[in-house]
Image 1 (cartoon, helix red, strand yellow):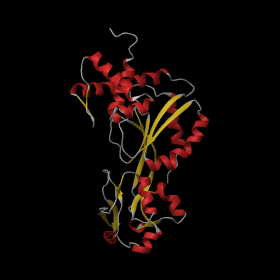
Image 2 (cartoon, one colour):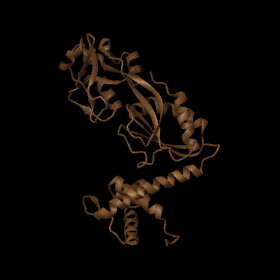
Image 3 (cartoon, rainbow, N blue to C red):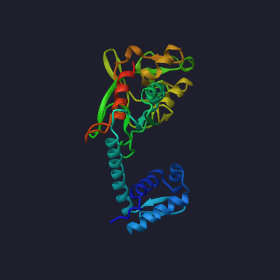
Image 4 (cartoon, rainbow, N blue to C red):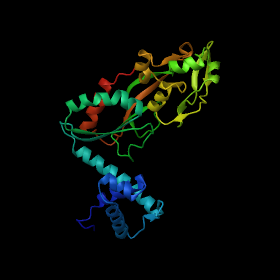
Length: 301
């Protein structure tokens, strides 16, 4: 039987953070501990389990088979603990920490400007917001709500549609002055087409020419990891890109960007969803009111 003075969940959490951040020093910074304290905690955990979890070297940490198995079980148990605490904390007054993940363009242009109003309505909620275009595992990253663009794939997730955005090709006036304005899809072969460095649901740019669908492969000289950074490159006149209309509408109105080949645009859209875990019971009130708030206040195209 475990002694009462052993905080097993605390040990699991620190161990999991060491694995996820790739070292004792990074985990120590995350928990405001010293690296030696984190190292001693992991060593104490290994001694209690009578198993080596991490092979240490001067250059990297490597999980042992036992460490890998323990890590996988730890993150599941920690997620269950979080869920238990959230469920127990459900009340009429939304409160507690709300972990939110969103892609960078949506986060900067839509989500963050709305958050002062949300916090005014629910002052007992504490937001933890991460902006990244990388698709995360909500359970592993212990995230309450994630905003995702495009088709949904995971059957473990519940989803609430926030809207859709029309896709459009855009360029900066400075780029057009130097390279000319494409008049038909075939002209794009002579232009620098910028895109993402990760797989997309639609890898090419769909267009219509004389009533016939065409797919153009964006083979430019730059790949980039998030939509906002891609927009910045287009604003700088580096090339053309195909982005959601909500992301560039203000730039188009201000003349900083120009729509390209709109006569050939098929009018396809990209759905925006808020996804969350919720199959095992009622949602905590802070998650429920956040989803309701997004559904009411998010305005895309």
